[in-house]
Structures are given as C-alpha cells and as structure tokens.
Image 1 (tube, helix red, strand yellow):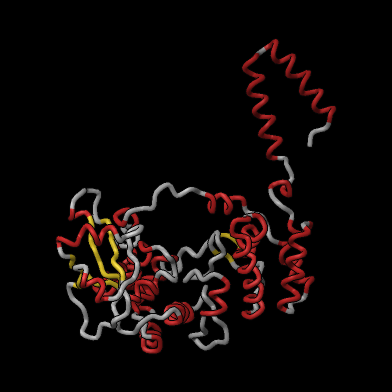
Image 2 (tube, helix red, strand yellow):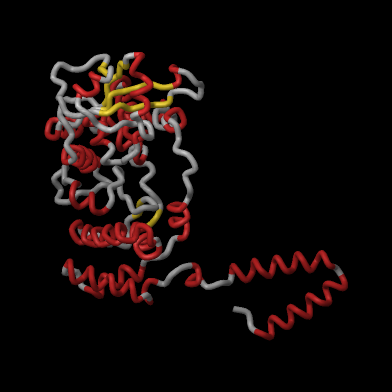
Length: 360
C-alpha cells in the first residue's frame, strides 16, 4: 500500500499538473492506478488457504476419516491457489441451451473423425479386448475420449488441487460436492502414488484423457495394462478399459442400440412433442409408446423391452417438420448421460461413434 508521504506528493503533483495540462493529469492518474494494481502482493489476489480456520478444520476432518497424516493434508491444502477464473466460469450464465445444429458440428468435424480412426487403429487390440470383456463397442469408447479431450490433446491446464480447493472453499453453491471430491482426490493420490500438487485437469477438477472426477477415478478406473496403476493420463489401455468399465457399471447393455429412428403417427405427433422437456421425454414402456403412435423404424430382433424415451434433435434453423429429427432413446443412451447428463452430449457420442465406425 502507498504511504501517506507518497499520497501527499501525488496530490501536489496533480494540483500543479492540473494548472499546466489537464489532459496529462488524466493519463498520469490512469498510470498510477495501473501501477498500484501491478504492485499489489499476490496474496491479495485470493484467499490464503493456509491461514483459514475452515480449511484447517476440513483438513483435520479428512485426516480423521482417511488416516492420512494431518500435517500432509494441511500442507497440500495450504499449497492450493485460489483461481478466480474458475469461479467466473462456474457462474457464467447460460442464456439458452444450444441446439443440436449448433452443438454437434465441432464434434463431428472430419478432422476429429480422422483422429479418432487413427486412435482406433493404434489401440485396436486393447479396444477389442475391452469390448469383449465389457460389451461396450470400440466406437463408443473412442467417441467419448474424442469428445472429452480430442483423444488426449486437451486434458486441462489447471492444477487439480487448485481447481478443487477453489470450488470446495470459495464456491458455496457446490461446496459440499467439491469438498467430497477434494477428499477423494487426496486419497487417489495416496492410492496411485503421485503428489496431489502435480496433476492438471479441467476447471472443475476432471482428470486425464477421459476426464474422470476423483471419485469416479477411484471407483471406476482400471489398470487395464497390468502395470499396477490406473494411469488415465499416459496409458491408453487404462483409459480405454476405464471408460468401458464406467459404462458397464452404469448398466450398459451388451449388443443393444443407443438410439433408433422413431416413426410417429401424424395424428400423434403434437401430443408426443408435448411430452418432451428440453428435447427429451420421460421413459415409458414400449407398449405405452406404441399406444401413442410411436414405433421404431427399424429395430434389432433381440431388442430388450426396457423403458425408452423420445429424443428430439434440431437439425436446421429452418422451421417445419424437416427442422427436427425424432429418435427413440434406448437404455444405452441414458447410460451415456451418466457420463454427462446432456442429451446433446449423449447424442454427439452416438453420432461420432457412427461416423468412426463408417470411416474405419
């Protein structure tokens, strides 16, 4: 902070300058403010977690619950740095959800398809083994990692400890969830033998090629290459096995479709569309949908009788019937939404998977 003497000198200078040249005063004032901001200590930019009672109390709680040494947990939390851009990103308003024609193109671009075909070719044996063991088609696994991180190119630039601490201690709306993930993260570091101060991930703390949150990493990541660690940053085998394992643990059905083209009787169309909330309906039995005029255009002979929904995708900006497509969302579609709850995300995984399979 500037001293009182310095303030007096600036006041005198400003007075003299105002007589001589008013424009210069404005420029000097702006420069003085900028200098003051740049000289402000880094600690003023955000909370100092080492000195906060709530952080120390949570460190003690984590230590008591997990058996991790308290001084280690306190040291890790003290080393975390508040990231204001993360809070800004979490608070950024979504004025209107995107339409399918706005959301999908970047994920279905030829360059992403080509990169996915290369990833599939380079990891064909592991993908085949995962499909045999878990029943998840290779193209679905490849599509998920293609959408999440462009096959590992964009795994995130924030230290995971910084992201999780920022959201655990300075984002009250989701603090309970992120405190749980922070605890899972330090346990993951112990389990996998890495320093919690090193890994980088997304602004929400998602990690590795498949972008697992710490709790999901601990519960669903698998050591698919047999080296004793589930490494979701550097081992494509572990990435592939873990994505497939995650889906099957969320009830992926082997050999069943993700979506099917829907045929809707003209007299039922308006009533069916009124059932959609945000582009997707509730799940109902096949008999209930058929009674309301909804049937699949084509379906496998062994299609299971589990409840399904109706999915709407906005195909163009134009109005009329050609502007939308309607699909039957099968149970595997809803499994993908356990990875990301957005209907557009799940539809993009399916659409990219179809293009990958066709291009291979």
